[in-house]
Amino acid sequence: MSIIWDQHTINNARQAIRDTLIETPVLPLRSSKIAPFLPADAEMYLKLELFQHTGSFKARGAYLGVSSLSSEAMAKGVVTFSGGNHALALSWAARQSNVPVKVVMMETADPLRIEGCRQMGAELVLAKDMISCSNMVKTICEDEGRTYLHPFNDPTMVLGSSTCGAELIS
Image (cartoon, rainbow, N blue to C red; front, top):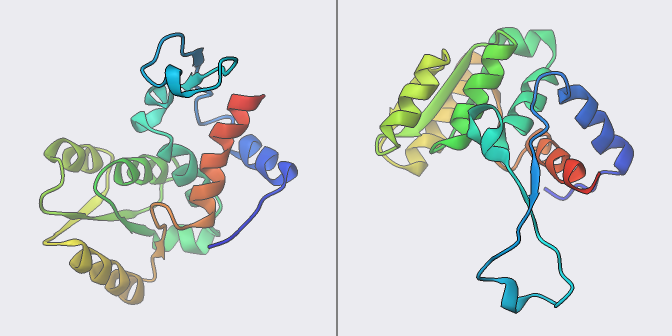
């Protein structure tokens, strides 16, 4: 995937998620072990996405992805595979829009993340390894007509993440 968005597109994405997502705080990093490796006048900031819904920036792309679907695609639902943050984020985002969500996770995934997805209404499918996860997602898409929202290689996921950077520099 090689997409470059202009500022207008990123601003539109920010507007699309503004009423649902949290504009998380930014704090200056005053002391750090990496400071000696930076130019003397460098300033570092932390974007505290741990305060975002589900605890990570992944909620941005997941919500943007779900809310960008047609009503027909929403009715059929979404599917993904993930070890954690994206699974939680998509479960949350789908719940916000009343969209059925199926999440494929490895059997070895963090039990708290598995339970978190279930509590948000996701239907869970557990698989032995990543290849099995990928194959299951493909089968689910073919059999059920669900939309696959890839955890990182999906334009809406990347565009959603870019809203974090846009907030940081604004």
